[in-house]
Amino acid sequence: MTVESGVFTILSTSADLAAAADVPLGQLPEVVRRAGAVDPPDRWLAIRWEEPNMVGNLGTPRFTLRAHDRDQSYSWIDAVLEAAKTVLTEVVHQHGITQVDWIGRSSDLVDDGYETLTKYDTYVVAAGLNTGRT
Image (cartoon, rainbow, N blue to C red; front, side, top):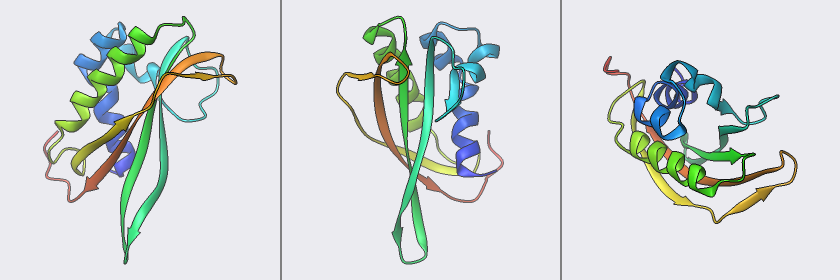
């Protein structure tokens, strides 16, 4: 499993994140999307992967998790980003990921293209061998 797929799986199968997003767990994969997804719902999370920081031959994957809300609620955005932060930073040897470190959160933003309120968190991922734990 790739690091990108591992992060998506962790987020899209989290009961805690589904509760914070106020959606049934089975609908969470529709809320957690890769950046640039077309026709998103009114509220969603977008995962955007950045170029890895290279040290020699090794790179550290880095991504942002952006929450969007067309209903104009920073409280929903804050709740889902906090839930995602908890889920991701508790990862230890799951889906090929050794751990996920939270770097920080943006200020309140507006996305003129999607016409949403938005904020994002930045993470780095330490990836290793898949231990078989899920």
